[in-house]
Length: 292
Ligand SMILES: Nc1ncnc2c1ncn2[C@@H]1O[C@H](COP(=O)(O)OP(=O)(O)OP(=O)(O)O)[C@@H](O)[C@H]1O
Image (tube, rainbow, N blue to C red):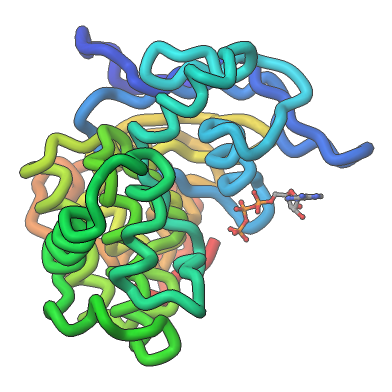
């Protein structure tokens, strides 16, 4: 892996070393390396099927890798004990693709689920109050707490999923394609919310996305998955300087350029100017639907 920014002296709440994942003969990751910095929003990009979700599942212990090391908040996810595992799971929140809300529970009750699981001693009243606070924190109106997922718009469902991910005051937040399926205004609002929560709550965010606007708007660095590995991790200007065909096509192709339009970051402008040739500069498209 090429880590393009080596001027960092802080700690890494997520460390992945030599990770290999395979389903039968199908090798998804081979000796993958990744380190996530404390307090950053790390965007994770890559073509469809490159294993972004499998990587996230490996980090949070939902996927048993074939080999390698995964360390989260100092905890070895491969060999840690059950008690430790339970403790560590209360220190992160996850927003899965599609929200993964329980359809028979209201939004408030969905947010209460992890509170009940990890803090059964909390009174019903306090638990409900905490859940309603998380619902508001996620930008939903108070009354949304009493609605069922089927009564919510796609954007509201994402926010409800976010409220549940924030239930336990996590240090780490995992977001799997949080803006997929949202209209551009809803997606931009979700981006802003993510950034605001990251800054006010001091979160470290692992964010899988195909959404170039999200990358430009809120990601401190971006990790690129290809060839079964994280081929590079760095800021967008740093990635743009690399002569890798997928990276060039992704960031410097028509959708990448459209996402860039309107951004006033001289570092990015300079990087585009200096980027190796080869990207298709023609055409235009809706950047919020940008796929890989
Ligand atoms: N439980 C599983 N059993 C078998 N194969 C799986 C399983 N989970 C994922 N895969 C395969 O692993 C590969 C990577 O899947 P993954 O969902 O991580 O891709 P992704 O990069 O997140 O894709 P997308 O951007 O389309 O969401 C795919 O080929 C997928 O079919």
